[in-house]
Structures are given as C-alpha cells and as structure tokens.
Image (cartoon, rainbow, N blue to C red):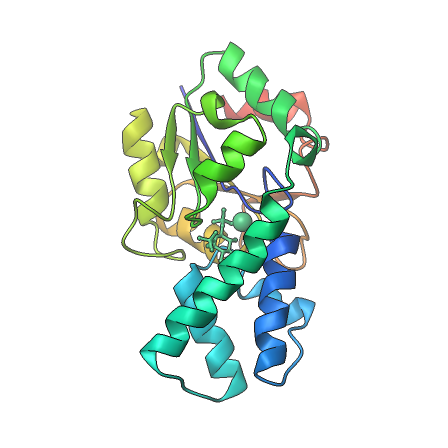
Length: 214
Ligand code: B16
Ligand code: MG
C-alpha cells in the first residue's frame, strides 16, 4: 500500500497567494517589489527562512528584535486572510481526491512547513481527513530538508520509497526527491522541473494515474 503526503499551502488550499501578498508588504518596507519569480523561492520555505531571504534580497541586516517584529507582523497580515477562509477555499478536486484515497484505505498525511496548518485545516473542514499531521510546529529543519516528509511517512507507517508527495514548491519537490519519495508537482511544469510528474490541479490527475501509483 502506498502512502500519500500532501503539502498544504498551494496544494490543498490557495493560501500561497496570501503569503505572497503579506511578504510583498514586507518587501515594500525594504524598498523593493517582490515579483512572482522571486516569490517562487519563498514557497514551501519557513517563515524565518523566508524573512532571511527577503533581507538578503534587500541587501540589509536588522536586529533580532526587529526581525521578530517583522515576522509577527507578516503573520498577522497573513492571518487576516486566513481568518476569512471556509470550505469553499479548498482547491478544486482536492476534497474528492483525498476522500477517494481514504475510501480505498490508503494512509494520508499532511507535510507542511506552516505553523498555521492546524488552524487552516480546521477552518476548511479538512482536519479530520488526515491520519497524520506534520507541520511547522513539529519539525526542526525546513524544506528542502526532507525531515517533514520522513516524519510523515513514519507516522503513517509507510516506507519513504512507497510515499507519493504532492507539492507546489521547488523546495518541497527537492525535499521529496531527497527523501526518496515520488514527487508530484502541482503547478507550472516550467517551474517544478525536478518533479517526477506535474499537473496543474487535482482535477487533471486522472483516476488511471492514481491506480498506476497504488
Ligand atoms: P507559516 P507549505 C509553507 O507552507 C508556505 O509555502 C510558505 O510560503 C510559508 O512561509 C511556510 O509554510 C510557513 O508558513 O508562516 O504559516 O508558518 O507550502 O509547506 O504548506
Ligand atoms: Mg506549498
């Protein structure tokens, strides 16, 4: 039996756009525009590492206190969007896809860098669908380190080589590949070049493809 591990932001829910808007504001504070291309480098990356990258791009350094303050402000901005989320914000085809896996008895886990993952899953009504939830609160190393996916595999009792990871970020695809798992990109083929396969969304993933994976 295969195990299925889902990233959260940008795969299950479209919160990637909320992270983008909130980080754009931080970048503006440092006097530059966060473009979509630069934002790709932030996807899947932890809050702290994302802010470090922004400071790097701005060519500046700040005190620990200011760092803490900016990270907190970014999260408060982000949560203003998250607090309005409902089950309508689950991306097309995701609910049905996970439900089908569950009906077939396949173990399903969440593997996300986000510390807000439990809140988002509860707001969208998906929390109880997962056999294991591994998120930014339970890992010590951020993607592209494979830790998050390896812990998820252990929790659902499936060997890494029998796990299939769904990811929208370059860092996450790298983490899945390093973990020795099958990596399925959700998004743009031109960006997720290291994924084993790429689909634009879950509607596109045909039943035939899932049956091949089992
Ligand atoms: P938070 P994922 C990641 O979630 C996001 O892609 C990334 O943009 C974000 O900085 C990171 O979570 C931390 O999120 O600030 O909510 O703890 O894609 O791994 O589900
Ligand atoms: Mg993501």
